Image (cartoon, helix red, strand yellow):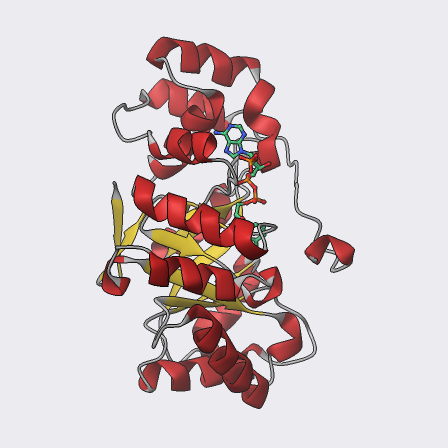
Length: 272
Ligand code: NAP
């Protein structure tokens, strides 16, 4: 495993995403992921699966302190009291005393960032949250957050894969001593028939998914959180630490970017 050293923390660069895995399937998937060796799990209030993530962690033989656990406050809970009450519920579901990282899931204009961030800062002071972060924030929103946040912001979790550049945001994160967490790192499965990734994969005897994840985590301060509900893919995605891409290959993959987003920022039924 590679770790990202940021703000005094050591964050496993490869995590396990859980969006759209629900119920017992989620419990099984997280249990398997922990057995394979994943030590970074990403969930959210909006995923409606925190209790199954919690159960999986309880059932596993891995100590809680060896797992980096992230959850996110959903948009309906951004007022101070709601941050606190909804987070208590998250903790209960996750069957833990604390999370390693608590994110604002997706900004919205109605509640000032400061109100949400202050409430999250109180949770840090109470020892229930180890770090705070944001998700789906633009560079200008990140600047605003930095101005008003009492606590340092560890990451901005955004969509990032070979078809969507995040160069500017990533540079900004590095300048602020933050990391960037790449969500939908496999472009929701769409990297899987790209000729360039295939050609590079053939050279290393790796799959297109492995090349993509390696490209992400080989970048300074970048973590990736692929989701897979199948053990085969979970294992495959974990086997990316035994090879290294050449600088020219890194650049060629970066040049695939064409501004293609896979996650709809509309908040309709797709968030079920
Ligand atoms: P993703 O990880 O890019 O892609 C998941 C898809 O790829 C699934 O269909 C999965 O199928 C398939 N897959 C995974 N590994 C594979 C492999 N080795 N070979 C072939 N197919 C493979 O998409 P994502 O779930 O959107 O993103 C990952 C995580 O990021 C989420 O689960 C969530 O934790 C986080 N996220 C955060 C936000 C946010 O707003 N902060 C938004 C979106 C996602 P199988 O399940 O069949 O393996």
